[in-house]
Image 1 (cartoon, helix red, strand yellow):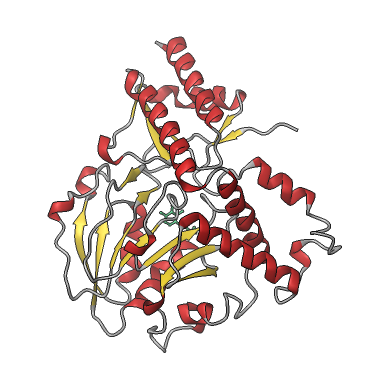
Image 2 (cartoon, rainbow, N blue to C red):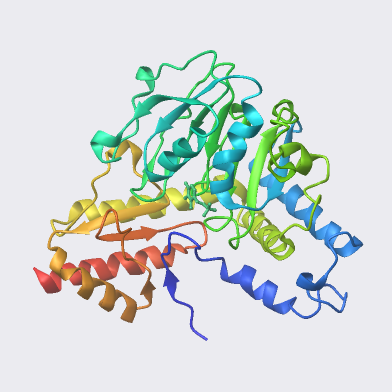
Length: 360
Ligand SMILES: *Cc1c(COP(=O)(O)O)cnc(C)c1O
């Protein structure tokens, strides 16, 4: 067996130890004689798996007691609708920060439910910046403020958490959750599709302050109401049981790494050395402003785009996979989520330097 270094933006690499544990438990989980996939979600075994996953996530992120953790389906994209459905609570408008392709989709969806007030719009920079914190003018009557702390496509990450006063702050953390320590109490809602830093696709984590639950528009589907999940331990219907189990293995793995501060230190180092290698060369470049370069998604352009195909092919021959950039940006993108070992970043940098030498 040989595992490559997989730089996919999502679904993304999972820790090898996690996959090995899942493999070892595949046919017989803990003496139960069955796979986790085959268990009733209401049975004692599965309930213990689900509860441990939540407890480990709470410990990892230091989630305060007045927040619920919901395990839902529909991806981050369903949260683009669930957020206004649950948080408008009679109000007419919400504030949005438009900083990339994902927040653009969130804005488009919210417009179906309310007036969207764009507090920031970085379209003119081709989404290579974050707005200046001092220039943000929030509407005190807005139902909530929504932003995307890490924009996965261009690789732009906020270097601050907006201060929205009493207005709940909502964050699409799909591609940054668990990458660094955060203060959950600053947020009203945090949501994330699992397939970047949590587990397989099919699960979405929603961390929501309790007072924001129970105000959903009653005309909306029951499955779009946070209360349906919070009142039923996310088991009103059959949850994505296997994804939840795997996410639990990833949370336990995160604790074993030493928790968020240890994970954060590794991620910072990985990102810094990759950006350093890009900046040190005349052959590669990254368009994002220095203060807001993403730790998780690192796009880079080759000076000569005619060499893109050769780069991809030769990288793949060295086991460095899925480096092709998003179609809207071109060039390359290395996604270096938690499961990407530092050795993978080192191998990528060494290859980039060799490729540069061979072609200049
Ligand atoms: C991947 C991603 C999404 C989309 O997630 P789905 O689970 O596919 O709906 C949304 N926002 C961000 C920031 C992402 O990285």
